Length: 185
Image (cartoon, rainbow, N blue to C red; front, side, top):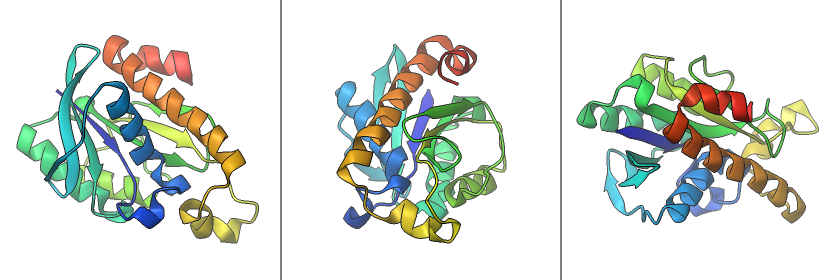
C-alpha cells in the first residue's frame, strides 16, 4: 500500500496559493482516478483507492503546513506503512515554475512542512515530488510569495507542474521511482 501525501494549508483562504501545490496535486490525482476524498481521521482528509493497479491512500493533512508530519505519522503507524511506500508532494521555490523534481530521499531544505514530516517520521528515506513555484522577486517577500494569491497568467504555468506531478505519481506506481526520476528530472 502506498501513502501519497500532498502538503498544504486547510483553510479556504490558502486554496489558491503556491504553498498548496501538494493539495492541488492530490485533488487532481483523485479526480483523474475517480477517488472522492471524504474520510476525516489521522488529523487529515484521506481516501483509499487503486491507481496503476496499486492500492493507495491519498492524504491531505489538515494540521497546517508546519505540523504536516503529525498527520502523516498517525496514518503511517495505523497502516504500518514503510518509508519506501511514502510519497510526499509539496511546493518548492528552488524548482522552476511548471517543473518538478523527484527524489528518493533527502533533507527538508527550507520547507517547514518537510521539516515536520522528517521530524515526525524520524526518517529521510521516502520519496518526494517537489512542484516548482519559483522564487519571489525580493528575498524578504518569501512568506507573502508562498501564501499570497496567484495571478491568472501564473496559474497556468503552475498547473503544468501539477500535471507533471500527477504523471510522475502514476509513473512511480507503475515502474518505480528510479524510472520516474530518469523520465521527469
